[in-house]
Image (cartoon, rainbow, N blue to C red; front, top):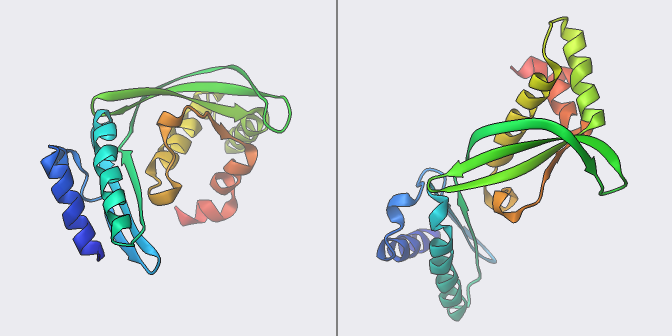
Length: 191
């Protein structure tokens, strides 16, 4: 099976299930590799993920019968509805450390999900230092919230095998190391 045949097969399966109108054709992709096929199906309505995953599971079983492996990702296009916080939090992985927590409400069509983003105190301090260097009078919690919004947008923009699935209930962590790219002199010259 080629990538074009895979796309036709997936389109047919999703069309028969009444799901093709919900597919974001621009972000979805169908690829062929020497060791198998890859499909990324992106839906605009997250409430239809389970149905689309069922169709793809059936296709994966059929592709194994043809002795071809099919690796597939079915995900949704999420938008940020709101971000609340900060509230105090404790980050446990790697040792107990204080952090700020933000709760974001994400929406994908008929599905909403609240996710937690923890910002380590070292990241909060790095943001404060960046504000101090700018010389502007800025509300620190609003500045951290804006950095959280940009971080969340970035994580939601990833596709393929590296996408972050908000439905997995794992909080995101924003550390000082993650901020180095944004605050580095090289990133300022790129804009």
